Length: 211
View 1: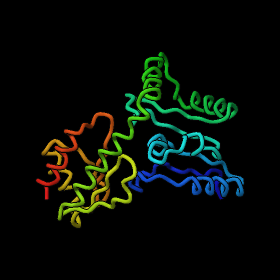
View 2 (view 1 turned 135 degrees about the vertical axis):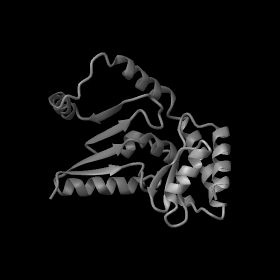
View 3 (view 1 turned 120 degrees about the vertical axis):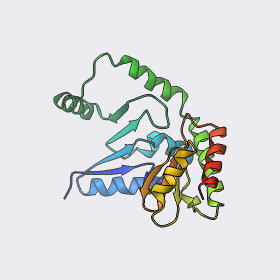
View 4 (view 1 turned 120 degrees about the horizontal axis):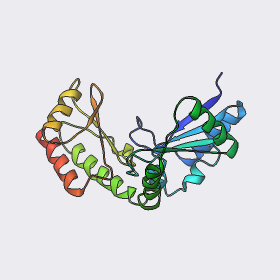
């Protein structure tokens, strides 16, 4: 038995995929039926919103709480927010203080987060388009494959030869392109605020040279 059901939307290991609304609603319903709270790990929930055209409030409608990262696609230097009922937030604030999570003079950080929320949501579509461009180019290369159905937002998971992931990451790094090893045969590339069209072209050339 548990006390909480947590859903990550978008799904990192799912390649940045978005849960359909009916799935989100069904998971929350199962949580309620089993007397569990329902939480959305919404580190990239605005990516899901932009990709699906669904409002964030609708995506998380049936959930008790949502955590939102301000420093991933939204581009703030640091910070996350927790959204929930007034009662829950009051309790969360107390627990944060008990565990030493309080910060002083954090207004400058909050200002960056507010700027990100007011200015950087709609532009996430640019990250999605660049990720799609990168994915299609890599998938056309004989040494790599990409599940293009998974490329719904800003992540690209690239499959390479068995045991070749670490070597591929190293070769790409030599071309100035940073990626992440996921397992022996898979690496991840992410488009974000600081990635330009020229960077995508450079990344495509780096993958081509790393075959």
